[in-house]
Amino acid sequence: MRILVSGSHGLVGKALIGSLSSDGQEIVRLVRGKPTGPAEIEWHPNEQRLNAPAVEDLDAVVHLAGESIASGRWTDEKKLAIRDSRVKGTELLSDALARLSRPPSVFVSASAIGYYGNRRDEVLTEKSLPGNDFLAEVCVEWEKATRPAIEKGIRTVHARFGIILDANGGALAKMLTPFRMGIGGRVGDGKQWMSWIAIEDVVNGLISVIGDKSVSGPVNFVAPNAVTNAEFTKTLGRVLSKPTLFPVPVFGVRLAFGEMADALLLAGQKVKPNVLEQKGFDFSWPTLDSALRHVLATDKRG
Image 1 (cartoon, rainbow, N blue to C red):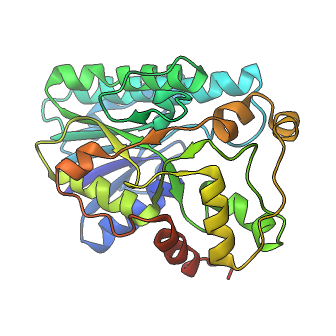
Image 2: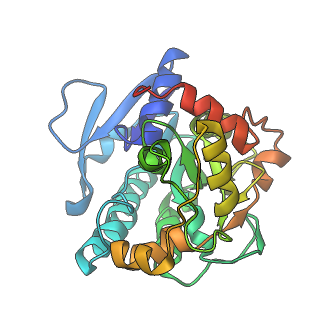
Image 3: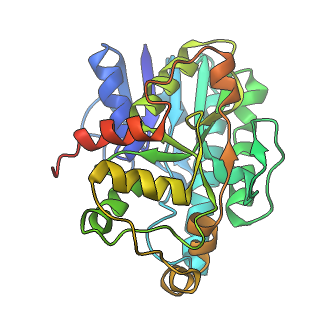
Protein backbone atom coordinates (compact mmCIF):
# COMPACT_ATOMS: atom_id res chain seq x y z
CA MET A 1 0.00 0.00 0.00
CA ARG A 2 1.00 3.62 -0.56
CA ILE A 3 0.20 5.46 2.65
CA LEU A 4 0.42 9.20 3.33
CA VAL A 5 1.20 10.20 6.94
CA SER A 6 1.10 13.67 8.49
CA GLY A 7 2.63 14.31 11.90
CA SER A 8 5.32 11.79 11.01
CA HIS A 9 7.74 13.05 13.66
CA GLY A 10 5.24 12.79 16.51
CA LEU A 11 4.89 9.98 19.04
CA VAL A 12 2.31 8.00 17.05
CA GLY A 13 3.64 8.95 13.63
CA LYS A 14 7.14 7.64 14.24
CA ALA A 15 5.89 4.37 15.71
CA LEU A 16 3.33 3.84 12.95
CA ILE A 17 5.78 4.55 10.14
CA GLY A 18 8.33 2.21 11.69
CA SER A 19 5.81 -0.62 11.76
CA LEU A 20 4.39 0.03 8.29
CA SER A 21 7.85 0.33 6.75
CA SER A 22 8.98 -2.94 8.30
CA ASP A 23 5.93 -4.57 6.70
CA GLY A 24 7.00 -3.30 3.28
CA GLN A 25 4.42 -0.54 2.88
CA GLU A 26 5.34 2.57 0.89
CA ILE A 27 5.28 5.66 3.12
CA VAL A 28 4.84 9.23 1.94
CA ARG A 29 5.18 12.03 4.48
CA LEU A 30 3.55 15.44 4.62
CA VAL A 31 6.30 17.91 5.60
CA ARG A 32 6.38 21.66 6.22
CA GLY A 33 9.83 22.16 4.72
CA LYS A 34 11.18 21.59 1.24
CA PRO A 35 10.77 17.91 0.25
CA THR A 36 13.99 15.92 0.12
CA GLY A 37 12.63 13.34 -2.30
CA PRO A 38 9.54 11.70 -3.80
CA ALA A 39 8.59 10.24 -0.41
CA GLU A 40 7.78 13.73 0.93
CA ILE A 41 5.05 16.23 0.02
CA GLU A 42 5.23 19.83 1.16
CA TRP A 43 2.27 21.47 2.85
CA HIS A 44 1.62 24.57 4.94
CA PRO A 45 -1.66 24.12 6.83
CA ASN A 46 -1.57 27.52 8.51
CA GLU A 47 -1.41 29.11 5.07
CA GLN A 48 -3.85 26.61 3.55
CA ARG A 49 -1.30 25.53 0.95
CA LEU A 50 -1.14 22.01 -0.43
CA ASN A 51 -0.65 20.87 -4.00
CA ALA A 52 -3.67 18.58 -4.32
CA PRO A 53 -2.40 16.59 -7.36
CA ALA A 54 0.64 15.57 -5.32
CA VAL A 55 -1.60 13.42 -3.10
CA GLU A 56 -3.06 11.47 -6.00
CA ASP A 57 -2.72 7.67 -6.16
CA LEU A 58 -2.71 6.95 -2.46
CA ASP A 59 -4.25 3.89 -0.85
CA ALA A 60 -4.63 5.39 2.61
CA VAL A 61 -4.06 8.64 4.50
CA VAL A 62 -3.29 8.85 8.23
CA HIS A 63 -3.51 12.41 9.51
CA LEU A 64 -1.81 12.89 12.90
CA ALA A 65 -0.51 16.47 12.79
CA GLY A 66 -1.40 18.96 15.49
CA GLU A 67 0.06 21.38 18.04
CA SER A 68 0.96 19.73 21.36
CA ILE A 69 -1.65 20.40 24.04
CA ALA A 70 0.75 19.66 26.90
CA SER A 71 3.64 22.02 26.14
CA GLY A 72 3.35 25.36 27.88
CA ARG A 73 0.49 27.19 29.57
CA TRP A 74 -2.72 27.72 27.67
CA THR A 75 -2.54 31.37 26.73
CA ASP A 76 -5.07 32.68 24.21
CA GLU A 77 -2.36 32.37 21.56
CA LYS A 78 -1.61 28.77 22.54
CA LYS A 79 -5.28 27.79 22.48
CA LEU A 80 -5.66 29.32 19.02
CA ALA A 81 -2.63 27.34 17.82
CA ILE A 82 -4.10 24.13 19.26
CA ARG A 83 -7.40 24.71 17.50
CA ASP A 84 -6.07 25.98 14.18
CA SER A 85 -3.37 23.32 13.80
CA ARG A 86 -6.05 20.65 14.01
CA VAL A 87 -9.03 22.19 12.30
CA LYS A 88 -7.32 24.12 9.49
CA GLY A 89 -4.89 21.31 8.72
CA THR A 90 -7.70 18.75 8.57
CA GLU A 91 -9.86 21.03 6.41
CA LEU A 92 -6.96 21.55 3.99
CA LEU A 93 -6.15 17.87 3.67
CA SER A 94 -9.78 16.76 3.52
CA ASP A 95 -10.56 19.30 0.78
CA ALA A 96 -7.54 18.14 -1.22
CA LEU A 97 -8.56 14.48 -0.96
CA ALA A 98 -12.12 15.32 -1.99
CA ARG A 99 -10.90 16.95 -5.22
CA LEU A 100 -8.91 13.93 -6.38
CA SER A 101 -10.01 11.85 -9.32
CA ARG A 102 -8.48 8.79 -7.60
CA PRO A 103 -8.95 9.38 -3.86
CA PRO A 104 -7.61 7.02 -1.19
CA SER A 105 -9.91 4.29 0.05
CA VAL A 106 -9.52 5.32 3.69
CA PHE A 107 -8.78 8.51 5.62
CA VAL A 108 -7.82 8.05 9.28
CA SER A 109 -7.86 11.39 11.05
CA ALA A 110 -6.67 11.85 14.62
CA SER A 111 -8.97 13.05 17.36
CA ALA A 112 -8.94 12.53 21.13
CA ILE A 113 -11.06 11.36 24.03
CA GLY A 114 -11.07 15.00 25.08
CA TYR A 115 -14.13 14.97 22.81
CA TYR A 116 -16.15 13.74 25.80
CA GLY A 117 -15.10 16.42 28.27
CA ASN A 118 -14.88 15.78 32.01
CA ARG A 119 -17.56 13.16 32.70
CA ARG A 120 -16.52 11.81 36.13
CA ASP A 121 -17.69 8.18 36.50
CA GLU A 122 -19.84 8.01 33.35
CA VAL A 123 -18.89 5.15 31.04
CA LEU A 124 -18.21 6.61 27.60
CA THR A 125 -18.40 4.91 24.20
CA GLU A 126 -18.19 6.11 20.63
CA LYS A 127 -21.93 6.86 20.81
CA SER A 128 -21.61 9.24 23.79
CA LEU A 129 -22.30 12.93 23.27
CA PRO A 130 -19.47 15.48 23.30
CA GLY A 131 -18.55 17.61 26.29
CA ASN A 132 -18.63 21.40 26.37
CA ASP A 133 -15.15 22.49 27.45
CA PHE A 134 -12.33 23.81 25.27
CA LEU A 135 -10.84 20.46 24.26
CA ALA A 136 -14.25 18.97 23.55
CA GLU A 137 -15.12 21.89 21.29
CA VAL A 138 -11.78 21.53 19.48
CA CYS A 139 -12.37 17.81 18.93
CA VAL A 140 -15.88 18.41 17.57
CA GLU A 141 -14.56 20.96 15.06
CA TRP A 142 -11.59 18.70 14.27
CA GLU A 143 -13.84 15.80 13.33
CA LYS A 144 -16.26 18.01 11.39
CA ALA A 145 -13.33 19.21 9.29
CA THR A 146 -13.23 15.78 7.59
CA ARG A 147 -16.67 16.35 6.04
CA PRO A 148 -15.41 16.97 2.45
CA ALA A 149 -13.71 13.56 2.46
CA ILE A 150 -16.80 11.87 3.85
CA GLU A 151 -19.02 13.53 1.24
CA LYS A 152 -16.59 12.36 -1.45
CA GLY A 153 -17.27 8.80 -0.31
CA ILE A 154 -13.88 8.21 1.32
CA ARG A 155 -14.16 5.87 4.30
CA THR A 156 -13.22 8.14 7.20
CA VAL A 157 -12.18 7.09 10.70
CA HIS A 158 -11.86 9.48 13.66
CA ALA A 159 -9.20 7.96 15.91
CA ARG A 160 -10.02 9.24 19.41
CA PHE A 161 -6.74 8.68 21.23
CA GLY A 162 -6.55 8.25 24.98
CA ILE A 163 -3.40 8.63 27.10
CA ILE A 164 -0.72 6.89 25.04
CA LEU A 165 1.89 5.04 27.08
CA ASP A 166 5.42 5.17 25.74
CA ALA A 167 8.52 5.51 27.88
CA ASN A 168 10.28 7.76 25.40
CA GLY A 169 7.56 10.32 24.73
CA GLY A 170 4.15 11.63 25.69
CA ALA A 171 2.62 11.83 29.16
CA LEU A 172 4.36 8.80 30.68
CA ALA A 173 7.83 10.05 29.77
CA LYS A 174 7.11 13.27 31.67
CA MET A 175 5.97 11.32 34.75
CA LEU A 176 8.96 9.03 34.99
CA THR A 177 11.54 11.39 36.49
CA PRO A 178 9.64 12.30 39.68
CA PHE A 179 8.37 8.74 40.09
CA ARG A 180 11.87 7.30 39.72
CA MET A 181 13.07 9.81 42.31
CA GLY A 182 10.43 8.46 44.69
CA ILE A 183 8.48 11.73 44.81
CA GLY A 184 5.59 10.76 42.56
CA GLY A 185 2.02 10.76 43.77
CA ARG A 186 -1.60 11.08 42.81
CA VAL A 187 -2.96 14.34 41.42
CA GLY A 188 -5.65 15.91 43.58
CA ASP A 189 -7.90 13.28 45.14
CA GLY A 190 -6.87 10.77 42.46
CA LYS A 191 -10.47 9.89 41.60
CA GLN A 192 -10.30 11.16 38.01
CA TRP A 193 -10.34 8.38 35.40
CA MET A 194 -7.40 7.80 33.06
CA SER A 195 -8.16 5.98 29.81
CA TRP A 196 -4.79 4.80 28.56
CA ILE A 197 -3.34 2.60 25.80
CA ALA A 198 0.11 1.20 25.03
CA ILE A 199 1.81 2.68 21.97
CA GLU A 200 2.05 -0.71 20.24
CA ASP A 201 -1.68 -1.24 20.60
CA VAL A 202 -2.23 2.20 19.05
CA VAL A 203 -0.11 1.23 16.06
CA ASN A 204 -1.71 -2.18 15.65
CA GLY A 205 -5.16 -0.64 16.07
CA LEU A 206 -4.48 1.92 13.34
CA ILE A 207 -3.25 -0.78 10.99
CA SER A 208 -6.38 -2.76 11.81
CA VAL A 209 -8.80 0.05 10.96
CA ILE A 210 -6.88 0.88 7.79
CA GLY A 211 -7.46 -2.66 6.59
CA ASP A 212 -11.00 -3.22 7.87
CA LYS A 213 -13.42 -1.77 5.31
CA SER A 214 -16.31 -2.04 7.76
CA VAL A 215 -14.85 0.54 10.17
CA SER A 216 -15.75 4.23 9.85
CA GLY A 217 -16.63 7.11 12.14
CA PRO A 218 -15.29 7.47 15.70
CA VAL A 219 -13.07 4.78 17.19
CA ASN A 220 -11.83 5.01 20.79
CA PHE A 221 -8.14 4.13 20.99
CA VAL A 222 -8.00 3.15 24.65
CA ALA A 223 -7.34 -0.11 26.47
CA PRO A 224 -10.40 -1.92 27.87
CA ASN A 225 -9.43 -1.25 31.50
CA ALA A 226 -9.41 2.41 32.46
CA VAL A 227 -8.05 3.23 35.93
CA THR A 228 -8.31 6.13 38.34
CA ASN A 229 -5.37 8.44 38.77
CA ALA A 230 -4.81 6.96 42.22
CA GLU A 231 -4.67 3.45 40.77
CA PHE A 232 -2.39 4.56 37.95
CA THR A 233 -0.07 6.16 40.50
CA LYS A 234 0.00 3.05 42.66
CA THR A 235 0.66 0.76 39.70
CA LEU A 236 3.46 2.89 38.27
CA GLY A 237 5.11 3.07 41.68
CA ARG A 238 4.86 -0.70 42.08
CA VAL A 239 6.34 -1.35 38.62
CA LEU A 240 9.22 1.04 39.37
CA SER A 241 9.58 -0.26 42.96
CA LYS A 242 9.23 3.29 44.26
CA PRO A 243 7.00 4.85 46.91
CA THR A 244 4.14 7.13 45.83
CA LEU A 245 3.62 9.13 48.99
CA PHE A 246 3.59 12.70 47.69
CA PRO A 247 0.18 13.73 46.32
CA VAL A 248 0.06 16.90 44.24
CA PRO A 249 -2.57 19.28 45.65
CA VAL A 250 -5.15 20.78 43.33
CA PHE A 251 -4.06 24.35 44.03
CA GLY A 252 -0.47 23.44 43.17
CA VAL A 253 -1.44 21.91 39.83
CA ARG A 254 -3.57 24.92 38.92
CA LEU A 255 -0.84 27.33 39.99
CA ALA A 256 1.72 25.53 37.83
CA PHE A 257 -0.38 24.82 34.74
CA GLY A 258 -3.36 27.17 34.77
CA GLU A 259 -6.36 26.15 32.65
CA MET A 260 -4.46 23.17 31.27
CA ALA A 261 -4.48 21.60 34.75
CA ASP A 262 -8.26 21.26 34.84
CA ALA A 263 -8.44 19.91 31.29
CA LEU A 264 -5.56 17.41 31.35
CA LEU A 265 -4.71 16.55 34.96
CA LEU A 266 -7.85 17.02 37.05
CA ALA A 267 -10.50 16.01 34.51
CA GLY A 268 -11.12 12.41 33.55
CA GLN A 269 -12.93 10.15 31.13
CA LYS A 270 -13.83 6.50 31.65
CA VAL A 271 -13.77 5.41 28.02
CA LYS A 272 -14.47 2.01 26.49
CA PRO A 273 -13.03 0.81 23.12
CA ASN A 274 -16.34 -0.61 21.92
CA VAL A 275 -15.65 -0.43 18.19
CA LEU A 276 -12.22 -2.07 18.42
CA GLU A 277 -13.61 -4.83 20.64
CA GLN A 278 -16.62 -5.40 18.40
CA LYS A 279 -14.27 -5.78 15.43
CA GLY A 280 -12.27 -8.41 17.30
CA PHE A 281 -9.14 -6.34 17.94
CA ASP A 282 -6.81 -8.20 20.30
CA PHE A 283 -5.09 -5.86 22.76
CA SER A 284 -1.56 -7.03 23.48
CA TRP A 285 -1.51 -5.13 26.77
CA PRO A 286 -5.06 -4.85 28.15
CA THR A 287 -4.05 -4.24 31.77
CA LEU A 288 -2.05 -1.31 33.11
CA ASP A 289 0.51 -3.41 34.98
CA SER A 290 1.40 -5.43 31.89
CA ALA A 291 1.46 -2.34 29.68
CA LEU A 292 3.75 -0.38 31.99
CA ARG A 293 6.15 -3.30 32.40
CA HIS A 294 6.32 -3.67 28.64
CA VAL A 295 6.82 -0.01 27.72
CA LEU A 296 9.32 0.58 30.52
CA ALA A 297 11.37 -2.34 29.23
CA THR A 298 11.76 -0.35 26.00
CA ASP A 299 12.90 2.85 27.77
CA LYS A 300 15.96 4.05 25.87
CA ARG A 301 17.06 6.03 28.91
CA GLY A 302 17.23 2.86 30.98
